Image (tube, rainbow over all chains, first blue to last red; front, side, top):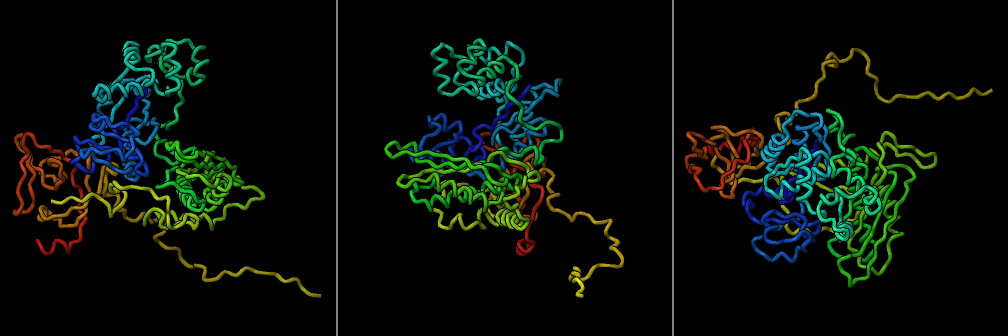
Length: 424
Length: 138
């Protein structure tokens, strides 16, 4: 049996931990750059505020608005995951606010009770409410989790065929994990409306219409695990750098305002690349490929649209910010076209290898220890004194791309000068 | 006939000789104050501003380590919220009654009654303060 533990309105819940006056009030969190709503408390949902609603449209003075504070959410997530890991050694952190726990080694556990204990522990230790769905497969655990939230009971366990079939019948096909709007259209055309209908479809039909993904989904809906486990394995694997090492890392953000000049975009791209480099070094990985994209604002159809990305093979695997930036800016030279109002760019590093396995090419000079030391010193300074205090020249200094964050809360858990102050 | 020049490396500075340090086999990690925190994933640092807990040696500007995982008991110093505001007080529990009691006679007790939005946020485990801040008051 697998559990999916999902934090309820995670970003809003994080804000509430440090401000008790927010309980029972509608709270929303906006995307980077204060663009649109990305998290809503139940009260905000009840007011009819939609996911993705533009921030400037929120006129109701009752609604408390926050800019996204990823330093806070990231640390709170780490704390929640640490509490979850005490329940089960086999854990897969699926996203910032959800994790799968594999309980197949605990056949004698009362899973309903375990689910309740998980909820109690996270609420007590971190102050974050979570919901728990427990079922034989990842897809069903996801579904059980949604169902728990819908019934407002916090934990839903699906054991046996009767419970599974009841769950499938209670779930619309559009809510099945992996079914997007396009699939929903196709399925509705064939009168497949509930997850139960979907689970009855012949395998060949699924393969034909929803490819191998659909085939896997079919197995999962019928209680057979078909989606690979990507979490930790053994009792002691959890928490080690190797286990949590990511396979690719990406930083992509919208600019504070549309940018047209290549120099301004270069500064943004260099900063994003520096942040990718820092994350690489933190997990002791090097990148062998680098991908850059640049785009205009798709939500402004009146503007000329442009979207292009490019992937480079790096001559030597590296995590040196200077080298990564040089390659990223080279990619930008190819991508950039004058005359567009660009809204966003991003950089991803792919096919990561552990530092210890970097293959030095005969013709490209190997990463010198001096370079590595410089990067280490830069990372230490930035961690101690503030993000981006020490930076490479290409990252620039006037930062036209800087984020708009008008409603930012403090970094209560990662900065000593921003901790919660209590007057009494 | 000219003899080939032989280059010999020169070590700058001195090479330690003599006895090795008798402490070498006994070197230990230096004390790390993080070890005071028994539950790092549920411990938060907050700053206390005010005089209501001055006789509990919590001066203004003190930093408190607050552990959310601990079940609060009678006489614990707690961070609690009452009707949406945080405060720091002694928790007194008796006969199903709960009170928040200050450590300063100039401040009032808060009795927890039906209808209050009362939550205990965490238990204070350590106080980090500059002793000079206590001088004027105690």
